[in-house]
Length: 115
Image 1 (cartoon, helix red, strand yellow):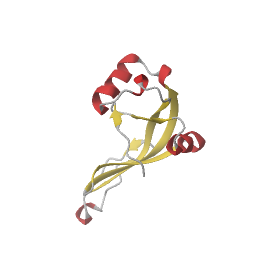
Image 2 (tube, one colour):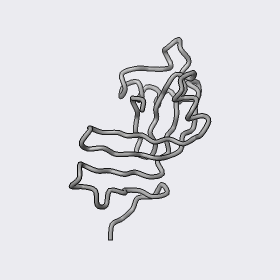
Image 3 (cartoon, one colour):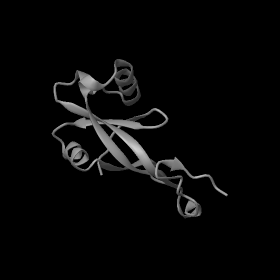
Image 4 (spheres, one colour):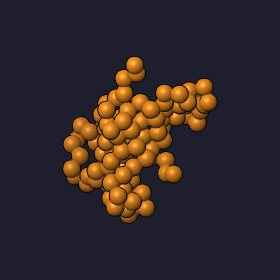
């Protein structure tokens, strides 16, 4: 597990990591991702796909929003970074044992509406 800052735009998460890192190599090799976000007792697990983008491919407004949200700007670093667009396919959420039932929020990238 690797801690990464992210930007959420309502449909995708954007993360950045050094291009030579194991995380970057694994994401490029498989295109699959599993992220855990939230506090220890209130977690959302996101499974999805990842697309790699070079810093030059990031629109200025997106790069600026990422830098503002995360507190660092990979475009300004000397080390080469890649951005990854994470497309959620499944979201699971729970808060300890009292929330185990019904924790699947999406399936196949679509929100599940309870009956």
